[in-house]
Length: 318
Image (cartoon, rainbow, N blue to C red):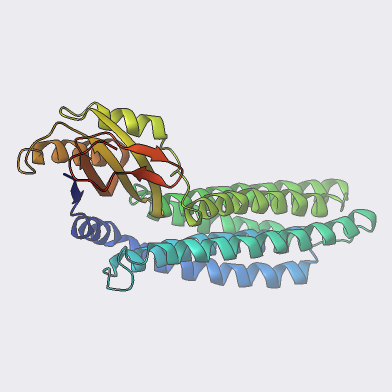
């Protein structure tokens, strides 16, 4: 006899994510608006000052705006309940958007590298004071947003946005240092070198988003979770003899799901309820997995490439 049990977690997840989104969405909205305005200011100042570094940093700030927008979009999607056509909800919407936008940012960085290469051979004069003023404004903006996000940094999306802001603040510091060096030495080649550094930072942060989002879309093992640790945790639950056909994947950023077959002694479903509760508590407490489907078995089955193969004759071993 087989007992299929599914953890009742949709209401749990929705309640948890609604609580996480309260307050953070206001911070995200204001931070996103301020960042987009600053991007426009940087582009205009970069064109006026002739600074490719400022224009490159505007691209980096756009990655920050993207991170903030995706975090806000993630809060919105997590509040939407599952329906008949999307039984797991809308977690993958934000992941798909992150993947596409990260690819576009890599293309933007390639353009920055091309322009920087041209300027390395033909350096152009820049307005150092404009670079310093705009970069200083960027530091104030990024530090202010970081302070606003810090209170909500337990959410993975917001924590990612916080890291983006920290990286951009460091980029602004580099621009100020570069402008001071140009002012005192006249080495205009510093400007394209800074743009290459900032472009590399964009690629680095974008590649991390591409790798994580692609892993989620391909239903790979969630980051930070190892299959052997999950297997050991389930086997350690009293009453579980063995576990196989185990699958763990991410529905979205921070939302994970699991399915498996657990071998137990032959007993009525009512008596196996405590085993099920032990498994779901272990998964939730140790791995933050709240969507789980556990199939109980009291006879071993043959595991093949397509999964667990059970004999059609009731009560007979596989």
